[in-house]
Image (tube, rainbow, N blue to C red; front, side, top):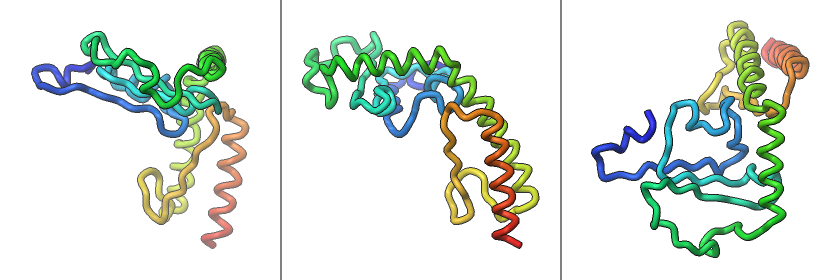
Length: 162
């Protein structure tokens, strides 16, 4: 797809991955990687510094000259400690294959939750409603922990509904 969505149109494609732990929740570094999208402007932040306040804006060559050239225009800039924390965070996440783990464990949990849902159809998966329970495991969860969660969750559903 790349930026084909904007070709032939006077539009700029912008993306933001600043909310929550955007890194790797979808099994890739960024959600846009799943779709082969390359935005013209890309904002990153929050989890990037693993607790240190940091943000960034990536601007494509197409928009060269757009940036103000003054890093004082950004909320969290010129903090060498936060920059070092961001670099180390990215290094560790890639080294430890966190995106791959998130994808595999996400699939494991989804499959298990769908099996439980067959027994308790009141339980919703995805979306937002009074019957949806959001499950947000850590990116480093393992299969044993997932299986333990599913077992306890199913036991709880049984106790609450019967």
